[in-house]
Image (cartoon, rainbow over all chains, first blue to last red; front, side, top):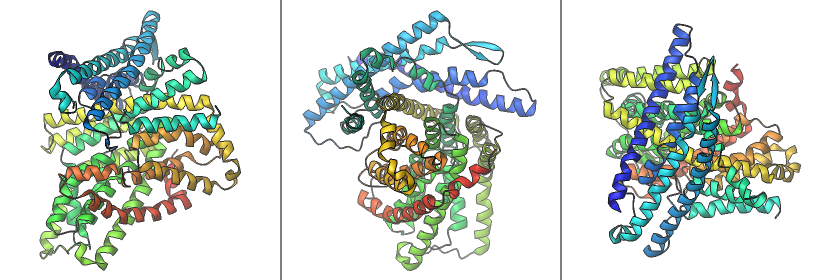
Length: 174
Length: 438
């Protein structure tokens, strides 16, 4: 199980790096656009649409599984557990399964939407050109699917591995 | 089920789930999902998650968030915190409680480069608290000023909370960012006066730091500015650009981040690893925000379908003649929520309920935005869940007990009573600058 989790970490890390690249491109693209607008009076065409339709979607969704692997999704962490360690452990498992169920619905629904938009060949009008945005639609189900797979494997690993169970099932990555 | 029961039980369900440590985004999204199912049917509930997540993220206005975060993270990794503290120390160190006053203004300066209160408190705690403790400052004062000063960050642009509020409340983000400047500076000024008065009355709180060589002091003052002037010029440039409407918030953030990176490299303060860390910090925080944000958008839709805002507006109908009562009632709710919820949860949970009420009563939503962000700042300091307190405790390696830090913040919370009274009584403090914008 741990080997599976370690294997899964590779695409999860890759998705994070793609998101970092999107963040870097967003900064550079917008800066170049502003510079072109004020220095040469010729803004880059379609910057707004490219930032919104590509960079933002990649940056906002692809790191989800990475966040889950580090237990970094926002929780009200200051609510201290008051039950026994055993109760806390099983509550944590229930919370992870509940989260996985929610993200599964998200994944399935965004997958259907992506299929539909791909078939329709969704484009946005950006200046004088048409920007195909249907590929961006796929970022959501991909991000969601990896998060669900990670959470399910993590739950199985926590239950099966007594050491992780005793440790309270912390993040698999520091 | 009546609208009132449905609305209140959905809010209660979210709070219970959050209490069970369910991620806040899941708590809001799942409750909204079951709400749609109850009000309409299962298919409607499913479709709430179909198109909304993409449309929510593919948004030009929200792209200011990663850019502001990146600008702050790059400035932070370029050592701007240390440079600001050095300058503030040289210029304010000789005043009563000088190091605390310096920390306060360094926090304000840091706020102008970064958009997150928690980042400001963590950075300044590592830099300033050891210095103050070395000078035998009272531990409560030393940690209290860092925790409280960190909240300035949310008010002084760039501010992530204003971007989120602006998008959800459909108010100009640029106006909100500019509206935060004067209340932010007012807060810092009131803090400074309180620190100076307290330390003058009780010098044991902050033993005076002597500067025997005046010539050396002035040399240090000018020297210290060398490290910060490029970033100060950059910050003023970004704010000026926003104010004049020359750049949008996203453009200001992107150009700010780009130039902050260039300055960091030229000053030999920013390494490649530092830049990658800054990117990682900014993008992972963005993804965290969107995970919660989607839950909040769906919950907002559910409340709209349930007719919650209309119901609350009708309920407070008789108060409408006196908006002050409404503001006070909302203030009390924020103070209570601030004791338990994190900033993002608080803003996303309350905007869908309160903003339509304020809009119907024709109260200024920019002014309300400033009040909301102030209350969120106060919530970062109030027990039992004062996030900045925990951040400061962890940044100082838990060597100072939580009670001491909370005790140190009480004086700053007392200042907040004065500041909030002023902001509520004189909306012009918040609205003067944005009303001058085109």
